Amino acid sequence: MPAVTFGGMSDHALRLLREQPHLAELAAFPFNFDLTRADHGEAVRLASGGPLEAVAGDDTGGTYFVCGDGSVLYADSEGSAGIIGNSVDEALEVLVGLPGWHDHLGLAPADGEEKIRAAVAETEEEIREYHGIDDERTELRAGLGLPERSPVELIGLLHAALL
Image 1 (tube, rainbow, N blue to C red):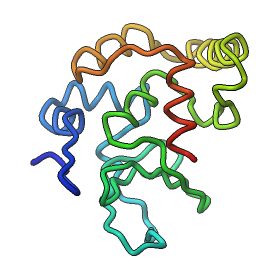
Image 2: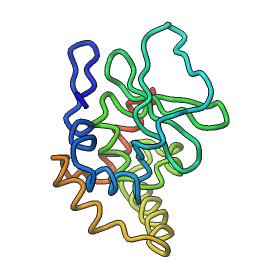
Image 3: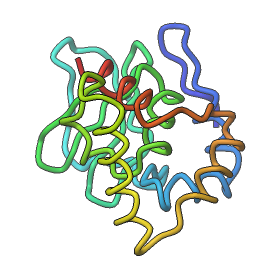
Image 4: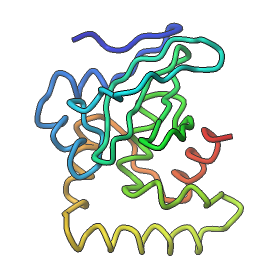
């Protein structure tokens, strides 16, 4: 399957996920970016009328869409939606670096490093009670060529995308 290309942008990580089943499995579990769940079930449209392509979903019924400018829109099953990255690569940086990212939507870079790190650590400890994430995160980042960023940087990326 070809890489998604809109407006001259291409997403390297999405192409790799589509070509390498093992990486796709890691993205799906435990990071909840599942290429096999790309059907949202209900029509999703941008107010601008711009193009959307469903590329993945999560275990709560939410769907990740690539917009015409390459940004990634997440639409949940309750009708809420928002941009979570300027590209699939950036969105995956957030999803892999901040598992449980939904819990951090209220955080902003202005909250400071201590508060952000504490919130992320708490969420990750809850996830670790049921799933491994550390080795999986390292393997997926390496396989997709994603940089390792601090929770503060990732909250900054997410916050900037949501604005």
